[in-house]
Length: 168
Image (cartoon, rainbow, N blue to C red):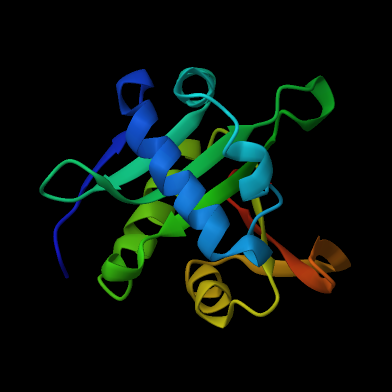
């Protein structure tokens, strides 16, 4: 396994985060609710704000550039404060198969800890390697959203998964 340094990205990482995020959206439009067309018009300052106001963990290569990222969003609403969601997980092609996906997901789970009850995510039903990873980390399927995304003329189903992390 190739070593990566994991850390929370901050506003100083806005440029490299913007780059990897746009790469993800361009290369795998079926895997994300956001679109490249919408996000490419956002400025570096917009991405800096996203990093300041949220939680994005980067897996950095030796050169300090993110080889992968994962976002965690904790619900702020009173009735759903027990839930967090994984968003925007992406690992660059050259880092796939190195264990970075598992490291990023483990870091996200650790970040949530046992303070919340449920960690949730959605994954396009055709992404078999991601589904296999999530299941191996204890996530369970709880629903399928049929035709959740439309890219061009193609519809994609999303599998909704969750990991119970806190006390019952």
